[in-house]
Amino acid sequence: MEHRTLLALFDRQTRRDARPDGPEYEVERVGDVVRQTGPAHGWNGVLWSDLDEARAGDAIARQVRHFTALGRSFEWKLYAHDGPADLGERLRGAGFVPEPEEALMVAGATGVAGLRAAGGGESGGSGGSGSGGGRAAVSVPEGIRVRPVTDGAGVELVAEVHERAFGADGTHLRRRLLEQLTERPHTVAAFVAMAGDRTVGSARLELPPGTVFAGLWGGGTVPEWRGRGVYRALVAHRARVAAARGYRYLQVDASDRSRPVLRRLGFTRLSSTTPYVYEP
Image (cartoon, rainbow, N blue to C red):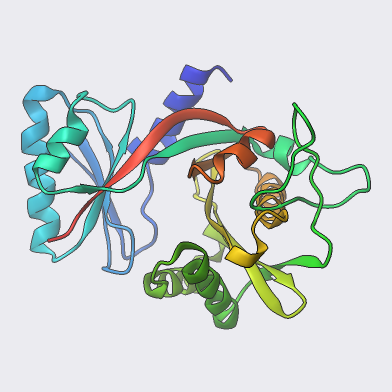
């Protein structure tokens, strides 16, 4: 699909017409802004906006008032193609703090799912070499197995890797993922990469209803296992699950570290995105 057409489809399905994360969440359009409001441990924020210079200031103030009244931290997920051109500057002026910019990257799910090394294998990891100039041939690192997460014990393993890989508190992740697996298992799949009895990587696959895009989230590898192919293993494994569930595309907000690996697996850049976070 042509770049501009695919970006418009992504905006429409995953942002403008997004469905709530669950029954305790509400997605609503308020003027020219689409936002999600939910519990404190969930994702609260602005998904999409269609603003110009005349309306941006009022729209920002309205969202701040809404979430502050609920005592919620929230995120304005700003994409490079969103208007007006100075929206990021306006958000900073209103008290939002930007997090690192990430690349919005997409790939065909069946294409990534079908990548295999000559010896037959699954996929590879958070670094490691590709196969020269083209698409990377991938294989499961020796001694690694990818295991699905279905219960609280597995969620704990995911959160532990998250904390070690990203240096971030996994409290909200534990609660949110367990909630999804228990109440809405059709919308998420989670996996851990095991080396013997040690957990060395983890990742999530978001499967939102009503869209052709499956989301890759939280792919992380513990420091001592980076560069051995664990990240690629988790990407390809999730691609196969997404393709089997009927999703046409994979999308990921890619950091500087994961971007080169994803390019070798066939992902292309659609845009970039910067989370602007507001703390009441």
